[in-house]
Length: 157
Image (cartoon, rainbow, N blue to C red; front, side, top):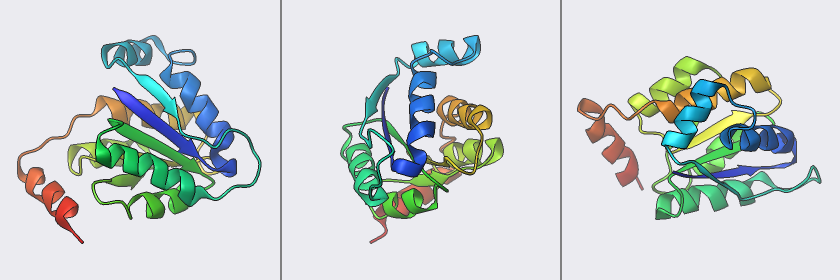
């Protein structure tokens, strides 16, 4: 599974933490096993330091890549996650979900087939952030009655 990461300066430190987590370096044995099973490959789409930058550039880069099938999923981080979520959802085919807790992460996958996870580097601690990422990646799309709704989202103008 190819996972694209993107952040602005406010989400940079959290992005780096998530990058190492997805590579198994900071993961629990359970999470490391899931990442091996999924054959997680991390593709860092920037930013690459804490210099001030514009979050839409990175949100669009990741969301377009996911929508085109270049990446299986994307994870975006800014200070609150709000800006990244708004920008990513402007891309047809991207279903970005801003998640601050485990229930939201689980439901974004189960019912909405979210393919981009947005996180707030200044809103969520690293421990919870890693649990959110793990939950989001471990949760499959439920399909069924939710399939039609996901299709309606993708058909919207």
